[in-house]
Each structure stands twice: as C-alpha cells, then as structure tokens.
Image (cartoon, rainbow, N blue to C red):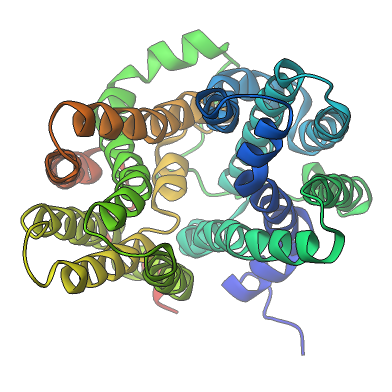
Length: 418
C-alpha cells in the first residue's frame, strides 16, 4: 500500500532516490576514506603535521565551496549541479588513488570538500523549494539522518575492506564507486526540476515576484537574519564540532584506553542516530524552538559539567555520562540547521542565500577545533570544554531571541498535527 499523497511518508518515498539515498551513499564513501587519510598521507612521506593538514583540507574545501556552490545551483539547477559534482568528485578520487606526491593528494581532498558542498547545498535548496511546510522539518531531519547513517557505516566498511585487501587504497576505490553510484542515481532518477514546488510561500503571504539577485546582493539584502539567527546557528555547529575535538583528547588526558573512548563515543553515535527523526517530529508539531533550544542547552550543560570533572576519582564515569548526554542532545538537533535555513530562505534566490547560510554554519564548525586546540595549548582541555559550553549557552539564548522573530514556523503548524 503506497503512502497517502501529501503525507510525510509520501515525501520520504518520493525523495528517496534523489535526496536520501545519494546522501547516505556519498557520506558512506567519504566516511570510509576520512579515517585513513592520515595513513595514506604518511605513506607518501608526509610528516604528521602535514597529514593533519591533508585531513583538514576536506572541511576547508567544503567551507570555501559553499558560496560558489550557491551560485552554481542557482544558475544550473539542483540536478545538473549534483551531476557535475559527481563527475568532478570521481576525477578527484582518481587523483587521490594516483597521487604521486602529498601536494596532489591534498589538492584532490580540497576539491572533494568543495564537491561535497555542492551536493549538500543542492539537496538543501531542492527540499526548501519542494517539501510542504507541514512536514518540512521531518523531511530535512531525515537528510541529517541519512548523512549520519553514511558516516556511521563508512568507517565500518573501511575496516572490512582493509582487512580483506590489506590496503588503505581500497577505501578510495570504494569512495569512487559511491560517487559514481550517486551520479547514476541523480542522472537516471526522477528529475527534481519536474517536481512542482511547494505552492505555499514561506510566510503564508501571497507570493511576490522578486528579480533574481547575485550572491553578494542576496547576502547584503538578508544580512540581518544572517548576522543574528545565522550566528546562533553557527554556535550550534560550533558545539557539534567542539565535542568531536574535545572528547578523544579528554579521554586520553584522564588515562582511558582508546577502546573505551571509542566505545562511549560509539554509544553516543547510536543515540544520535536513533533520535534524528524525533527532532523533525518535535519541530513540525511543536515549533522549531522546542528542538533547537533544548538540544543546545543539553549539549552545552554537559560540556560545562565535564569541565569540572577532570581530576575527580570518578572522571571516567563522568566522561561516559557527558559523552552520551551530548550524543542525545545532538540527535535531538538533527535537521535544525537545515530547517531554520529553509524557513528563512527567500522564495527567490534561495540557493545564493543558502550558500551564505551554510558558510556561516560550516565556519562555526571549522573554526572550533582550531579554537579547542589553541586553548588546550595555552590553558587546558577542561578550559577549552568550558569555552565551547559558553558558546553553546550564548547560542541557545540567541535562538530564544531570534527564532520567533525570523522563523514564521517557530510555533507549530496546524497541518503538521495530522
């Protein structure tokens, strides 16, 4: 029995081949390669600090690619942009396999990061324009869940491939297969340009024809929401990235073995994945603020508590509790950044605006590990955890202030109750 047309299940069924499956497949391939990048780099003769730079080239490429991706998607459309990104990704992955020097490898990783931003922005723009408001948050939370599924299974695939072949390069070939598979799905799947856009305007008002603007004109026109709600969104991205930088170092600093650290981080990852759809349900049924603020508060409070537990006798117990609590909070925030970006995006020039929005959120995520590293170097990992917690608490206050002002869906949509 097929889902009722116009329902959330119908959206999931129809958008699966064009959005959810490509997200899961591509992130699985990328997730398989990321853990072995340092090993591949050192195999080319790079010292450890250069290997770290190569690994960092992926998020740097994504950050740098967001604004150009907005221009590209706005000009050629979501489907063509994704096909182009798949083709360029395939060339970049081949360059990784054949890279004769560490410089070529680093450049290839940088290109892959930029291609990832095109994929992400094209999906975001497509869902923004076409998913009905009544279940927008659930549909976008599933995008986040698809990404989490890929990043969770990718490293497991890498471990199996390396055990089977004895070579880290097998993960790169797997990534290539994933990129080609995504390109085929997008090329031969339903054309997203042929799917009618959501007829309801974002504010519930009568649509107004607005001339298409360039990237900088769109950013300038919407600088208010970007500087306020966009900065709050960047704080959520910062807390998410901060936890990934803090937890492994914290575990080592209190004397835990790597297996125990991985176990608790893995349990937290399971909690994140289990709760991703609940976030969308909460946002659609009760309003955006009821997922964004509690999740931000839970993660920030957990990091703040962790700050005062480093030298306690039960430090390992507190570490486990805080890691899992942060995982629960992150799961409840699944899709929040995508949904808020879609809520405030203009009906016209959507891709350009989302390019600026994603640049802010990715900027928060990219800068936080550097901040954690610098604070740890001059003070301590506990102090770094406290600073990230304060950033998160400030972001929660900003969400409370700015979501009701800028998001017309900060309160529940009556249609979402059915």
